[in-house]
Image 1: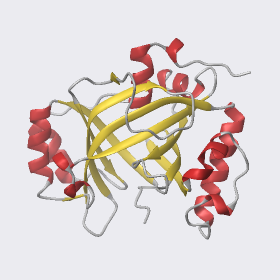
Image 2 (image 1 turned 180 degrees about the vertical axis):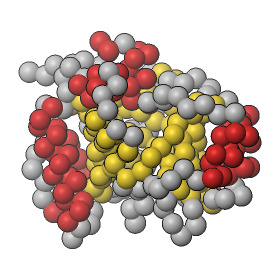
Image 3 (image 1 turned 30 degrees about the horizontal axis):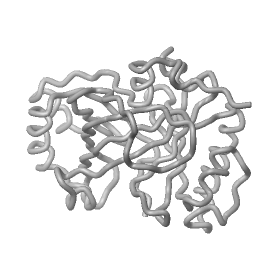
Image 4 (image 1 turned 90 degrees about the horizontal axis):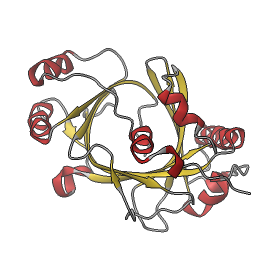
Length: 250
């Protein structure tokens, strides 16, 4: 079952671990742990994303330049099992609103789809889902428009808190954010030479689909939080140097 927030607002904060543990206690009064994360060490599960971009890193540059309307292309996965699905995602920012479209795809189809080949319903895990086919078609169109190629593998451990029976409010804390160049479609869990993008810091994200909840305001006040940029894909490239990620194929 796909539980993404298709359209939302999000506020990001870079915090220390001791603050993160205090926020965990605070948030537990309002939300529940993600059912999968609750069974994992440190209440977190691993998240991996393979980002695609143009040869000259256009989507990266648009973020660096602060374009108000921009998007990113990524393939997200959680497991190494060859039978486990992967998630083709388009994440757009339109002014202050974040909109996400994604399709749950058979892993065997990922290489062709990442090259922009026209998808079929056989590529989807749920072929009867027209909304997912629409997302996959849009993804492949953007790949062709950008001449996009795999660029970056980003991984981290996510602690997620969700509202019981609803999807309007979500709080996540991401730890050990790592990044490295990757120019092929593969789904390994171990990075060969990872760069720690934010060091020992934790990335807190407050996500909501309507108005900023009152108790979010209390949380920000109690812990003295200040919003700030924390773009895993972009900061990883900036830290390591654009030249490591630009690769032209003949």
